[in-house]
Length: 316
View 1: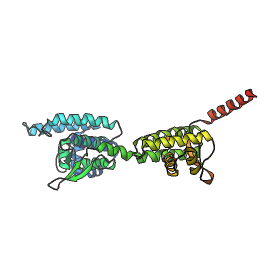
View 2: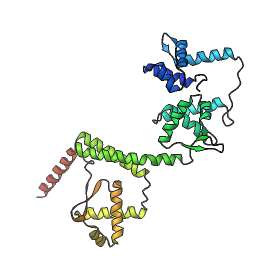
View 3: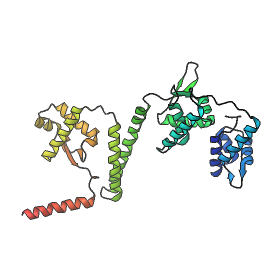
View 4: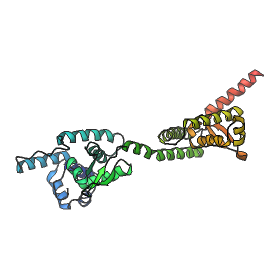
């Protein structure tokens, strides 16, 4: 904390920022410390290999033991040994880092996740993780941005950081929009580069994957009955092999017009239902289906066309 002793995490950050070429004043600003604290820390703990965080932490611990031969044990976290809790937090956080979460947000998240109340104040997080308030604040900001944490006030009007019971569902749904946008941009890329090009093929695979992810994650509200109707309409358009209007489809299927329109709407909103075909609205409001351009490469299309011509020639 500002004015207190530097933590191991502080020293790790100092080492990283020194390597990146940051000056003492900027490092001090980021840690919320006086510049003199940083300059003394680096001067005291630099050697031939430069400033090393682990060595600096070890030296600080030795100095602290010389000043206080007998130290009180750290208070337990939620009644559990603090050292065991911290070791688990670090272990779990390391796994989350492998999924793309930055280390400090991962440590803060696991600390909140394993607290009995599911929520802690900034001061409590600082104490448990032995990091600076600035580090906690930045980590909380990152976690809020991906809806893993929210702010609340306790009875004493203190701000607490909380993990809701449905946090995974919230995070799951939060990604849906992003996945759909990635799929849309990838499909646009196919139009630019061409479906038969290597780039178009890769973009097609990407669009297909992210569309599938988005559809699986999105709570579309479609019932099983609507999905079945959508597949029936799709089969009808494939069977006739020509465009049909809503009224023509409704008459042929002996359905109400609204039921037919709902089925077509489902196919439009959820392209994955018609995969490997695409529903298109053509002339006079009629609908037709065509193969997805990203399913076959140009070489495959040419080979299939050649095979079809060869078969027709043999029949003659």
